[in-house]
Structures are given as structure tokens and as C-alpha cells.
Amino acid sequence: MNSTTPSSTPSHSTGSFEPIERVANRLVGAAFSPHRHDTYTVALTMAGVQTFNYRGAIRHSLPGQVLILHPDEVHDGHCRDEAGFSYWAAYIPPTHVQTVLGGAELPFVSNGVSTNPALIAAAFNMVLDCAGVADPGAYEDALYDLAQAMNGASGRAAAVRIANRTAVMRAREFLDSAVVSGARLDELEQVADCDRWQLSRDFRALLGTSPYRYLQYRRVDLAKQLLREGAKLADAAHGAGFADQSHFGRTFRKAVGLTPKEWLHSDLFRTIVL
Image (cartoon, rainbow, N blue to C red):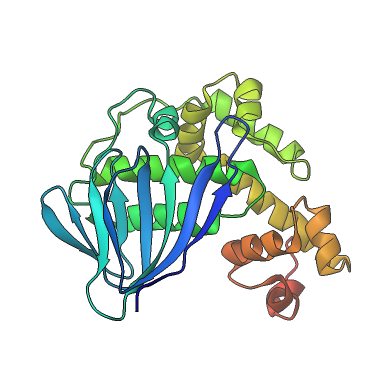
């Protein structure tokens, strides 16, 4: 029996980017005929084996691998066996990647499938972690990581530049003052008087994390403080600037390794920072 069960959701990224498309799909006993996209296809095989023809050879994508198809490259897709396969994918316009790379040639992952750890992590963030997150900074952050990871996987060395420490410190001070209200890269660009993507790179180089994640860590710190003072979970999430309790829970777990409720019942909750 032929069966496809797609789920497609346009995902709004930021005010400066048009929406991207994300899909969740299961394919059993059916096939995609040869076709092409004008976007990058970034896909994670979740179960089964995804088999496809790409650039003159048959490729196989297994769970735990990432599939990266270059814009305008013809490909198909079919099941290797009767069990079929399922995948999640995001379609990234090359213009978005270009905003990060600043005019450099688009990265090309030669065989379409990669086990590169940095690329898998970046793809997972783009396809799953930031899907449905209302904060547009989540997409900007995921886009930067994905573009740099694709660049690395394609064998291109990153250009060596001197980091703009003054701009980074200005951006950090602004983020410290905007924990609840939030800040986007275009705002940081104005505050720091520095191109947003250079600032994003320099912030990582000097402070070890991205502007977006730095802000999320400060929100988690504030939520911890509110919880210690007796706030309920929903009130702590709102008071720390999270869009909703679900986003709060996911972000908290990434930063602490526990859910907020687990943290409340742990010895970490009773830790006093001097």
C-alpha cells in the first residue's frame, strides 16, 4: 500500500527573512519522482533508510545522519525496503545563507549525506529545536550555525579576522539590560555599530556562545531567581521573558540538564551562590 503522511508548516523566521518551510513526512511504498528545489534541503532521517539518486549515484541516509541537498540539484526519493522511512526537513533559501557568508560562494556538501558532528548538530537545531519558537532570534542563531557548519563540511577554511571586542562588549551590556524584553541581531547591530553577522561571529569568539544563547542563559538565571523567591513555573517563565512555558522548559533543560520542576526538587535548587 502506498502511503505518505506529510505535515508541512511554514515557519516565520525574522522580520528580515521570508518564512521558511519545514516538513515532517513518512514514506511507505511510494516514491518522489525526480525534482529540484531552489532552496537548500536540510533533512534528518528519523527512522528507516532514505534512499535517493543525487549527482549520478544512489545515496542512503540513515538515522543520525544529515542530508544536505544543494539548490537546483535534481534528486528523487524512495524506500529501500517495505518498512519505509520518516524524516524531518527544512528548506533554507540560499539568500539566507548568503547573509551569513557575506558574498562567499555557497557551500556544497558533495555527496548529499554527512556524518559531520557539527553539521548534524546545526541541522538538528534548524529542523527541530527552533521550529515553532516565536522568538525570531532562534532562527537567526540556527541560520548562522548551519551556514558555518555547511562551510566547514564543504572543506572551506574560515577566514581569519580580528574580533571587534568593543562591539561585543556593547552588545553584551545591551543584552544584560534586555533580558525580559529581548533583542534581535538587527538591534544589536545598531547598538554595537557592527555588522550583525560579524558581531555574531565575534561574540562567539570572545564569549564562547552566541548572542541569542547568551540571552537565553540570562533568562534562565532570572527564572531561577524567581523560582527561589517562590514564583510558580508559569509566572517564572513569563517574568523571565519566555514566550510560553513550553519554550521555557526546553531552554531551561538545555542550560541546566533538568526540567524546571526537576530542578526545583534537586539539591541544585538549594545551592546558594556567594
